[in-house]
Amino acid sequence: MAGAGLHLEVKVEDAELRARLAQLIRKCSHPAPALEEIGEVLWTSTRERFETESGPDGAKWAPNSAVTLARKLGVIMGKKSNVTKSGGLSARGRRAVGVQKVLTQSGILADTIARQLIDGGHGVEVGTNRVYGAVQQFGNPANRFYNTPGGAPAPIPPRPFLGISDEDRTRIIEILEDYLRP
Image (cartoon, rainbow, N blue to C red; front, side, top):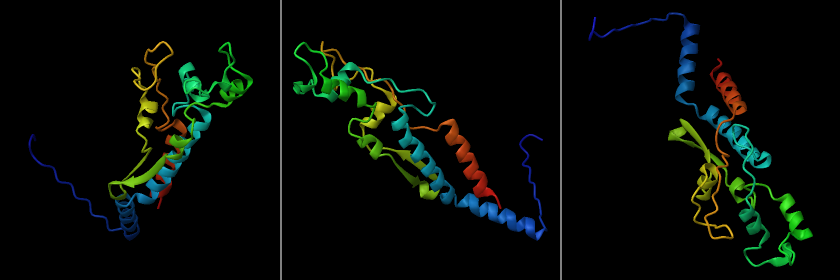
């Protein structure tokens, strides 16, 4: 019957079943406790990505470019102690390059990762308040901030740090199942 409305009514007279359904409805109406736990899981895994230098999919981030390494070493800024007279890396420069992790020049980006409930406790978000976080997440092929020694833009490849890994997904499902369990 096209256009006809269908009305279905189910009457539950079992007190225990009614109580459990009411509990489920209350939990679904107030998901903040589960979302807080999910936010903690995502916050932790996002912070760990700065240690593993890999994205949510497990792929390793692109290594630092020569321009980035030079900036980190202070060559562009005029600090010559990291290079030899012939332009190669000094022992100090080699040590500095050896310990330079991707996206960890100052540690500020990782330190600004935060989580918060949104939509009145019906959602959760994890992210950073740093504008350059978007550049790191998505990349910047026409980088206007730094140039190669020849003056060309030094593209920044994407290095995704935000997102949900397979492990995160499994943990989120476990949290939700635990939360909805009577």
